[in-house]
Length: 212
Image (cartoon, rainbow, N blue to C red; front, side, top):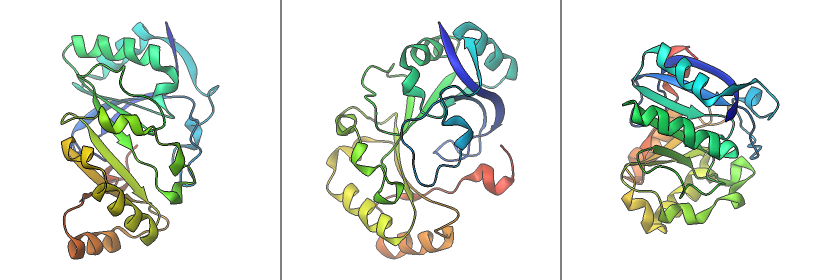
């Protein structure tokens, strides 16, 4: 079984409750969301990168030497079977496996050992209506939800979404993350401080550090 892989690299986990931990990343090719603020355009094309067997991807990750592994994209669930096979190999080898997903695809078939970080797309993304709402009933205390915010309207929308979605009380964390080009992190921090605890501020730590 093959995966279409953009890149495999070692860096610092940047935007979850594991932010700051050394982490190996598997970035897969292809995304069907088309968010207005996409910061990985090189991974949108499903023909980008190269074909690799699941075994060779697992071996490359093992060679990097980190026990924390994130599968990202692109949208990993466009390659669901290969992702499931890769995650199983890594989990069985003792790795902690995270998976970033745009929230548009069913996560219920995934191994429950995987730590899912799922986006809930805001109106500013241009694709808010594509959320697979059934996922909200699947996520649990092993998982996290992220709202990427382009400005004040997205912030208010996200707060309302959290308030009317009781299923989110089960997840490990809810992150509000600002789009760097349109929403200063300090402004988002001030709103959160003034309004209270709907979520935690999540800045992209890897960008602050200037690493991949």
